[in-house]
Length: 359
Image (cartoon, rainbow, N blue to C red):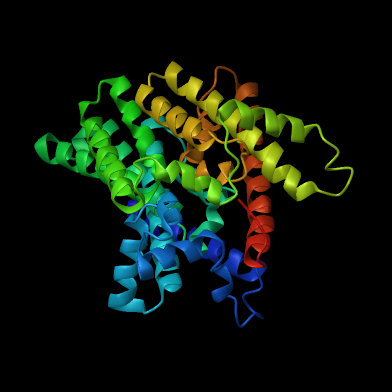
């Protein structure tokens, strides 16, 4: 039965990949593949090719883990950094979606196939088709969560070592991984390895750029306005009630106002639901990543930054409720959300592929 379900997952995944391929012009565009090499994807390749030169260390905003994995594999097999990055990301997304679906089905008694579709529907899932680090980070995050919440999956010392290694490695894939130091709030001593990783990262910045906190300053060099969570919140609220829609700026309004605010509110609500269900570690993880991903003056990439934790949103909608009417309402909301997310994903994938900004 499980093998049959995995086969269905794979069919869903192929159908989704075909959908992105067709809707971004893959059938008639000879440069379709190379056109995914946009924005940060170029910086990741530059890190692999040239490292972090002291004369221009601004690429320290990107940790070296993903360029190293992708670059090594490209030398061994594909001879293309972009092609290897897409290959790694597609595998990571499929593995993450499968792990999440199976785990949620057992733990929360929800349909695994429906969860799998929800993971694919996230507005930023199309980043699997470019060489960004988000999908590899997502898979490793859910792997360490699964090992931490389901200790019988790998019991004893082996499980402890595996969790410690993953927690140490995650910040070297994405800086967001440092948020998992918050596991100490749940008395997970293994999270000390995150602090060890932070110490090494600060030393790395000091060695390259002469300042342990250079990676924070470097964000401003990428036109990332400085600020904090509250400044970003006020900016998005101001943009939400602006005249963007009246003036035909629907896409910027969605990117910088509605979607960041919607997912911020929805993830906070889902975290509260998790606490009520006694899932404190999951709640702490979601909130700590959420705070870090939205800790900017402008939430221009927050939807992509939230991609690894968006699967949590399906749980309050699919879980059993006290009344049949409530269950029907939340399930209807779930399917509306899935349809809306797929539509948004196609729109933003087309924008990204054509060279525009899309998270």
